[in-house]
Length: 331
Ligand SMILES: NC(=O)c1ccc[n+]([C@@H]2O[C@H](COP(=O)([O-])OP(=O)(O)OC[C@H]3O[C@@H](n4cnc5c(N)ncnc54)[C@H](O)[C@@H]3O)[C@@H](O)[C@H]2O)c1
Image (cartoon, rainbow, N blue to C red):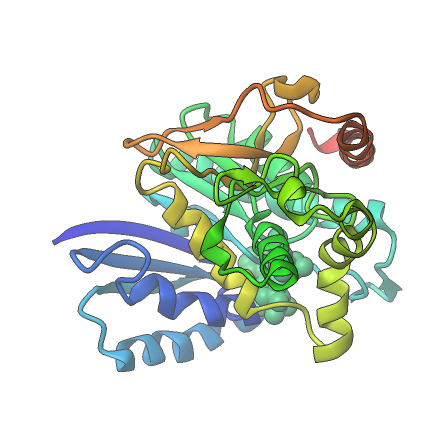
């Protein structure tokens, strides 16, 4: 059997718990690929990973390879093909007696983590490794990791697939359609409430989704608000942040890069801007993406951007520039 080496940080957290079985079951990499898992946690909870390892063993997946637990990223990142960086410090946690509420403080604390993780992956992971940052603030964490990874042959992404899935679900409900009827969903910009889900360039049965929906008021008010605020709505309802849907979106992102993207579709993720759509180079920014048969990712070019969409894209760009400014000492 072929093998794939996958590193997961924050593996004892709630997204980690929802993610591991789906990585190991054969669903993600195929029934002919053994999945070797390197699970990473902070030293205080690394022992919990032994429980995850035992559960994975008890699932009886033919596709499960080795499961190793780590609290040291340098040891964990040797030869990995994929790194799913889920672990990060949440807003509201108290560190050294101070409650971390300010975005700038949160960015700096997580920045320290992603500096080390980026270096470890840049030095030890495979040359063509793909790294997906889930831990928030995901785009700026990925920017820090990518900078310190300093390895151009590796691909860094920040997850916006959950936002794209949320957007598709809202459109499917509104139009009484199947999710699979909705293609080419783009989330522009930051994984934050400034993200811009684009229905002009999304398609329903080959037509522009905004044309099909034909209700600009719904698009600009309800749709935008629901998608942008969905994370908070779930926290309010569940008392905890999205976990199953976040893990599912991470799996979707991995799968999207494992084979050539169909001609009638694309996928959403944030990647390092090359200046496409006048987004400043060097931001990790949500774009429409395609993968080729070798897993190489490129940004879909030449989409029309309305004046309204441009305003929204400018807003999320500015937020990412502000975040970058907050952590400039770490770059
Ligand atoms: N991008 C998205 O769409 C999206 C969606 C949902 C959640 N998130 C984010 O994902 C992150 C994880 O969410 P969760 O619900 O699993 O949180 P959680 O608190 O349940 O788990 C996080 C885990 O990360 C671990 N961790 C912290 N720092 C670490 C480090 N340096 N190395 C390794 N592990 C570390 C913690 O010990 C904890 O077990 C949060 O930042 C959350 O905001 C992102």
